[in-house]
Image (cartoon, rainbow, N blue to C red; front, side, top):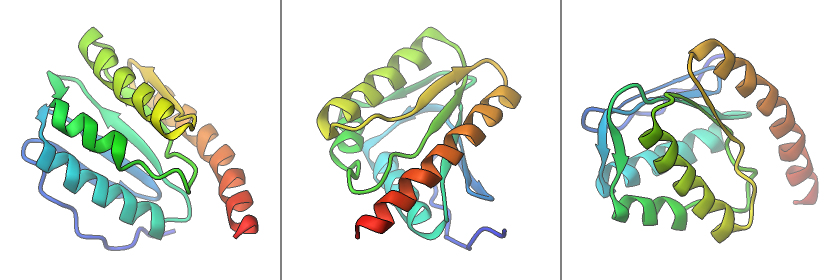
Length: 147
């Protein structure tokens, strides 16, 4: 399946690409509120145009999310669709802490489980993500049948 052409937003030092339902996000440095807004818009557009969507986050260097960006990401998560699973490659303590706090806030605020796991290399992250996408396909089908 080919990926639809959705304009990829500029996110400072961060890089985005979409390939066959996998949104690859390479984070480098601080994610600002403006970048979080563009990222969330892009994720939501991809989720509506792709049959299924997973995220692979590569966080090899320094990475953090401003408090304003964290609040925005939590507030703008959409409970009407199954959450997008996220595999994170980058095992630094700071990366784990930032993303765990962010995802836990989404879990509590939106009352939904957000599948996320950390990996030291990309191959097992992609394998885990493939399993999660099979599960999400089932959830999406249930969502469609309720509509």
